Image (tube, rainbow, N blue to C red):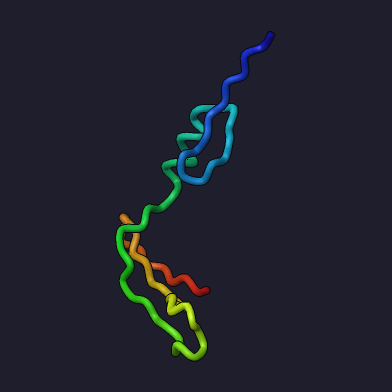
Length: 68
């Protein structure tokens, strides 16, 4: 019987055979720290009431906008 050892990035779930590659993957993911702004559509266009656009700030100070 063979024993197989692999590593999984805890953030994205990608599997690696090499531990350093898995660690590099985990360190490469930006971590959001807060939502800066959220924009909504009128309730007549979006009955769920969830944001159409959010602006997120990450731990390194960068900001990105995500659209639905």
